[in-house]
Image (tube, rainbow, N blue to C red; front, side):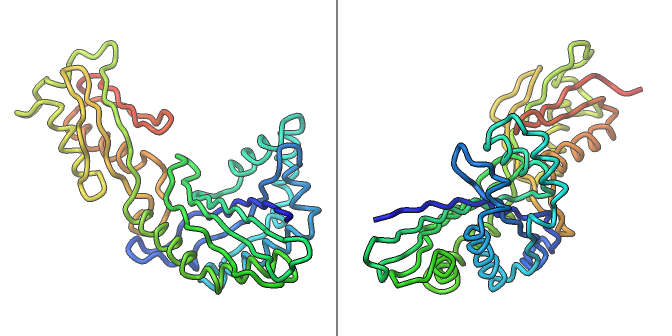
Length: 296
């Protein structure tokens, strides 16, 4: 029995759709090849006709699902050459990572295609497809599929089997994956945060402003700016607060929200109304705030 494993990355570009009704027709889909350790990911895409044929079938299946704005990496030849030059002495993994970073995308769907072709038994050919949807910026997992598979048949090739798996035999599992991904996008992402004191801060978080401690104003600001008002404090003192909140992935106009954009900007804006000098930045996946003092 021969076993051929294909892995791809489907990259979904900025979501331009209503926050309550995710319209898949506004999602731009790009397919990137994942290859073995020693293969050139860009050469694989450019030169492997069988691979491009399989990807075309995946795109056809996505079109049937309403993803009408699919793109071909060959439309971005300048990007390909720039990435190749930047990673000339690196590994294939470096190229793939750099390519994903350069593509103007926000949500990445990794798709693994496992092709089974038993010698002498073409009627037993089948493909299994595994999908994972991740946030490009935070690597948060939004959805993972059950095995999407084609029934054993005498398929001409992997392309025909993949199309059959996505649009017929594995239609329910494919639909379930897309539904789970969209539900996750609507629920938003969890954002850890920590508030510390700047070294020269003349006040701490138990200092009173307008009849309330600063830490209470922070909690109010978090509630006002978090998605559905959800946040949790898991540790606090006069010198720090730590916890997590929920923030949207898609804004009310349907655009992708960068990590920390809603919480960080909203909290800073609210606290400055109370004359508090606060800074924020995103370190890894955590929002870090520093209280510098009172604004004059």
